[in-house]
Length: 218
Length: 243
Image 1 (cartoon, each protein chain N blue to C red):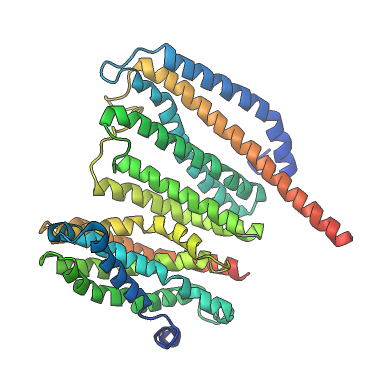
Image 2: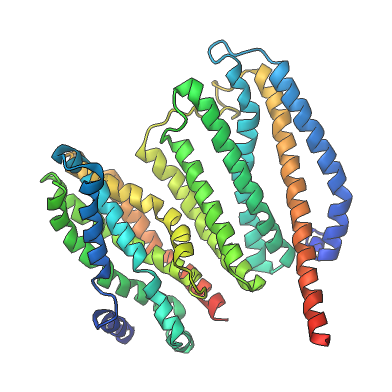
């Protein structure tokens, strides 16, 4: 399992692996927001938690098609499926690798981008906490979407259509935590619900992803 | 005699052809009676005037939008567990009907909301969760269309339906948490005091029964079409093989 994780991480970090693309996309989206809504700082600080959450979500979504597609193309997915490691573990590791290469950098970059959007001081810690709790769910749900569309030639758009509705609860609770944090309100309820969604997705969705992958590898 | 007999496409087609005329006629009669009764023979609401009568389209279509997804969920489960092709095809056939019902509910809701709430659209929990349901339908249909191999498509879409159902329910409660609503609560539950008045509820029940039968007829009809399309494909493949 650790060997697989290290392999995926290595592939992602090396040239052509696409590491950093998600991060750059996150940066670009955040920079574009003031251009579209105007530079007033009160407005920006009000929408900052939501915009940062949406940017992180889109960056996650964009990096999903590399998650399984490359392994599918060169056949290593077939090898992984016949390996002694259960496919459920394989997809969990894949999701973990995706989180380390995409989700974690987003969490770390979010406070910096928060400065750009004039995020209130109170909001920084809750933004980081909510992203830290929410992005694993995004990775695991995204792995399910990637597994669904891995057999398709141009599955990228379809995958967005499939994954976006599944992201709705995570986005709602995640940005609610960030928003309430920024406004200095109590965050416990949405925080617990967000953690619940993450925990349940991590526990259950790999089974669905593996089942879907088995169908696609048939 | 068990329900699994209808997993045989031939038996399914024979029986559905027998019941379909009855379904079409009774649904047409019920919907006509319900709508005419509702539109012309119910009093105007003292606050809403005659706009209240859009309820006779809005509530039945919303009911079927949710129940169509529920039917797809059951059919998907049957496919996953017992692998009856008719069941997978029925799930496929129900999706476009469900999406149309969702659209009707959203549009009639907007037309109703404009004079009553002063807005076509509000990010109210019920409205939002219907929009999310609409997105789920779109994804489900798109996945069916995208995959060539029918068995693979049936497997993937049924798992998507199962996972999607969980997330659809989650979204329903998440949006409740996220925003307070304009929409009223349940209009027809048994234990509530705020139900609609009897003058409206009787034609409403007639309309709802009509929509249920209409949905059944449409799904049976579309399932039959899918089965025949599948047969034609098989025949053509055989012909190519022999030629």
